[in-house]
Length: 353
Image (cartoon, rainbow, N blue to C red; front, side, top):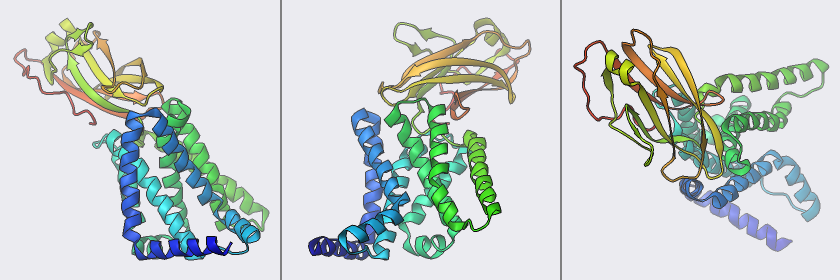
């Protein structure tokens, strides 16, 4: 027993002496996790399960500490527990951040969510901010805690359970709200009956806000590998023809247009996505596509739209959405009245735009 206590205290001393190493470890392991998830389903599941197990420790920290004191006769120093919590936050954020930075549409509201994760990751490695500014403010710390858990679940659940993005979002939101209950209840003692109603109201408000803001949350495991807007598709090689940024109304109505997308998804994942055609900000068509994950080049699929308005001139956009409405990316083009348009081969949009 004494030996275990000595080893734990030595570990605590090393953590205090080299805090930068812990932060660097969190960052590097997060990047390694992303590449392993992208390439090997087995590694992805192991990493995701380990991340969720660490969160079980974080949620049950008080219970486990009391059990250790009862079973082994000594308690862990509070500073060591604080460092363990900080390490879990670092690991969680740097595990999730590469997924969201890859899948974010940076010219949309998704920028706010991924930006918040980036700020949270920086906070987790800057001790003066983490311990002096964040931790003492209970409400802010709880918000930080819940955001981190939610991000980890969004990245991990589709890989572990092989469920579509809409189901994984609902499950991640439900688990995050449920696991935040002990923290919220601890900050709102229930000596009076009406405080229980306030607690239920807070939990419901948290769940409602999470669902309402889903359009601003990138789908962590889906991103565009390749895109094109073209008038031709080679069915044999499943490859698009020349990509267009601009075309005339006559050309559009005469030939129609293909929206080609190669979507990267984890091995084993089956997903329904939508091509939503929009003209000057107004939706004019919505076409469903079923995809399967696992291909290195992404699952190649396209929609062919032939029915356009009599006057199609203006700015067009093809949004690529999940079944829950989360945006994977967008393709953009412009229709002019003149037949003399640029028929260049520049891509309609960047893969993550």
